[in-house]
Length: 347
Ligand code: DAH
Image (cartoon, rainbow, N blue to C red; front, side, top):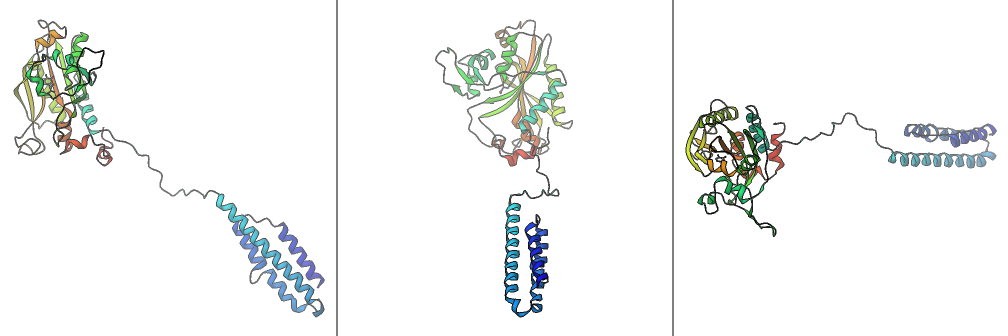
């Protein structure tokens, strides 16, 4: 019996000193002490060798030992679960990474950038002007005096007049107002384009919006002719739409140019067979142009006897819609990411 008591004491000591940090170690402990073939069971089996007068005392010691071993097991278990709940789980290196979402350029910007680079290749630089303009820059200087009927061609958004101002203010109806600003600076020759947003009080539909974009161009020097205008715009069309596209000029009227023309390209959506985009004519109008009217040159302080020049203004929306087969102009300003995400990677 004495050696059994000693064995219990030494096992108790071992349990007290045991440092069990992992769940594997705790499980090993359980098997060693409390398992079906563990030490508690083994000691119980010794009971039959203990003489009957000592059985009671040994039974009590053994029971106490069993409770002690069980208690320690529970303590270790709860300590370890407490610990693990605060430990960050090991990272799983096989999980896919978090994608780095890239944005997309807006299709209007993509078209404008292409137009800018085509004209940059033949020496045109870029300038910009304000979207809030006064009447003089938007109309008067461009040979459109107050009572001129052509002002009705462009339904204008006027802006409440600031108290101190003696001018009428408006949202520019075309980028031609930037021509005026550049000419007034007086640095000649001028070979520039002016991309930007313009506003008109139009009913919004699939084909029209109250704001849209234009790229205006201006070339002023000595001896500039209508032939220069045509060649410049032919070059542009081939670069923009490809060699297969056909071009035609139609005589037109703008107060700021004389003579004036409009330029159409063959509709490549339907191969000129007739569709909604070309209104079943086979042709799509892309710009207005002409030789800068001498009155405009004079209004802007340029000697109209010495200098001539040409100008054009083209819409960006229509070209963009043709290029990408977009049927409704409104999607270009709704900022729906499902639409915009389609332009990822296009530059
Ligand atoms: N400003 C005109 C418009 O918005 C377009 C235009 C026509 C611009 C002829 C020009 C031009 O510079 O010469 O409808």
